[in-house]
Structure formats: C-alpha cells, structure tokens
Image (cartoon, rainbow, N blue to C red; front, side, top):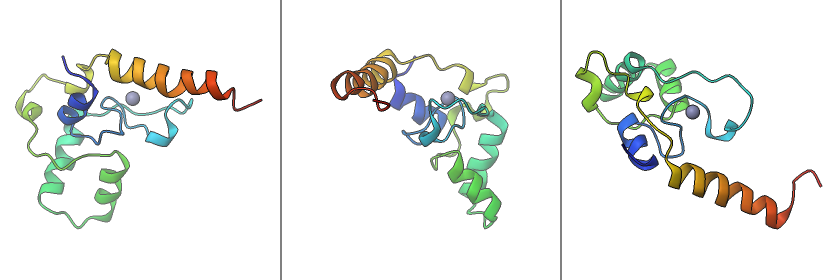
Length: 115
Ligand SMILES: [Zn+2]
C-alpha cells in the first residue's frame, strides 16, 4: 500500500510518470496503446545505467520510459514478483488531486476547451 509518490519511488520512475505503464506524460488520457512496465526489462535498464553504458539506444529508452537511477531495486531479487502489477489507485493523488482538482475544477471554472 503506497501513495503515488511512493509508488513512483518503488517503480524507480520519475514522479511525472505512470508507475504501471510506459505512457509519455504528455500523452496521458489519449487513446494510444501503451505498454506495461516489465520487471526484467526495468532491472536490465537500471543495471546498465549503473555501469554508465554508452549505448545511445539504451539512453533513449531509459529517458523515454522515465526511469530514476535506483539500483538495485528491492524487488529485483523476488523471483515471482511483478511489482508493477501490485500498485493500486491512489485516491488522494490520482483521483482527488488529479481528476477532480486539476481537470474537473478547471473545466467547470474555465469551461470546455471546445467552446
Ligand atoms: Zn499507466
């Protein structure tokens, strides 16, 4: 059980990123298909970052999915654990502050962007 900032810390991702999937923060809410974060891929990328890999494709991928330099994550040695599947919705940060305060209140005060 963790709130959104703690979920990001556990998922080793930046706080503007989704701890469950790899969606770009500017594309949240779009209907694009996004890939879920994968345990093995994430551990490999975190390990490569730790060794200062010079691979440009690696650096691109690392930044694209918004990982933080945390290595080794505590869940890396848990063989049957998919940490990204264990996160629950954080009502305060994601529903109240995210949907209600940031989107619904703006929409009600300033009106629909279409009008
Ligand atoms: Zn997501």
